Amino acid sequence: MKKLLAAVLSAAICLTASALPTSAAADISEPSTISLKTEIYDNDYCGPNARWKLEGGTLTIYGNGNVTDWQKVNDTPWYERMSEIHNVVLEEGITSVGRACFINAKGLTSVYLPSTLTAINASAFEGSGLSGTVDIPANTATIGDKAFLGCGGISEIIIRNGNCRIVGQEAVSGKTLVSPS
Image 1 (cartoon, rainbow, N blue to C red):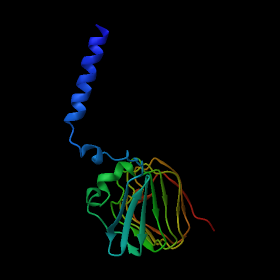
Image 2: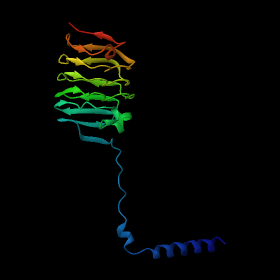
Image 3: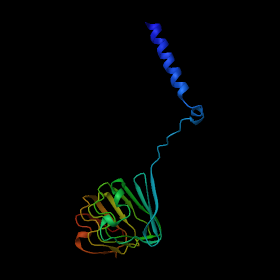
Image 4: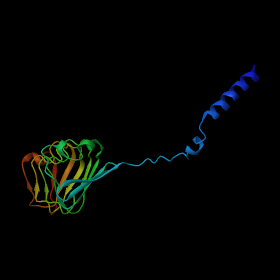
């Protein structure tokens, strides 16, 4: 019985192999390597001369000038990826954080603001997950209304410009403000 079963299996294998076209062997290639890379979203505009890229949880805004003032957060070009943003880095040359840029970005925990920054506009980080200390550079002249409203994780805001205009009490309410001498 075992010999009969072995003979039937051998015949089936031979018939299957002979049924393949002769070019099939030529079509078989080496297995490909799958690379696990972080997706990069890059080169999208977020201001007249400002662009953004998102890589590995860090949204970097680069170029020159202002970031657009958005009517609402879902107008921002990164809105569909907001849950992936954990850090924001504004590079030197960027002069403002636009209105409503990061409203309710709950995964956002840190922000780096460049020395070229002159304004943080209304509701820029409202309701975000920012935590720890936010260091606002000396060239920043204005912090807009509700800029940091609802950011319960922020323990202190260092404002390096003693003449910085804070619009509305809600801009920084509930935060320890430090103005270095």
